[in-house]
Amino acid sequence: MLKLFRGKDFEFTVTGGEQVTESYRRVHFSDGGLLAAIGVHPTMWVRLWFDNNGKPHQRAYTLVDPDVEKGTFSMEFALHEGCASDWSLKAQPGDTIEATVQGTGFEIPDPLPGRLLVIGAPVSLPAINSLLAVAPKLPATIWFETMQDGDRELPFRIDPERHEVRNLSSDELVDTVKNELPEFIDDPLGAYVWIACDTRMTRLLSSYVVKELAVPKHRVRALGYWRAA
Image 1: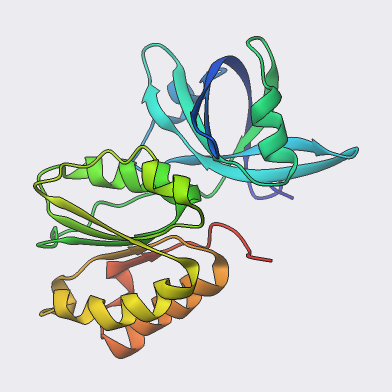
Image 2: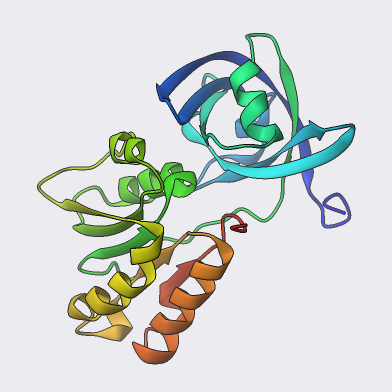
């Protein structure tokens, strides 16, 4: 189906890997010509294809530290039960994996807000880091879903003087964001809210931001990164 929608296919080769925390793994790749052909933009993601008991299974991952000249990048995997996590743990230099580029895109908010308002979770951390790098001097408040103790040790690329991370459990996230977010939105037309949680939370929060806080849809970027069981 992705090919019908003009997806472009590439093959990536593993060059190494590292265990960032017990539940978070980084895998390094050569890009198979991806970056030269497509270019790169903030929060850029691709779909990787895994074997799931003989059936193709795809998951989207954000590029980390893409280097166009070298044709390299990394990806970070929040580990949980599933074929993608299993693959990342077993991947060795020389292993290859198929990928499709379709649907990725990013527009820098214009005008820039006075503060980035970000709501995310471990699986969207690479995209959060990429977003913060768009305007590194811009203040940001990040409401971050922590599913286990190790999530507080994940590799945020923040400037402590400008970026604040508020760690919250899954049960706390939605209510806390609804209680705290309004204090940061004096001018809805100038606000910018970026949301990437599980599909249900993302829909709840994006609807709240648009309908109740009156932030225009073009000033809200909301992506459901996965479906919670």
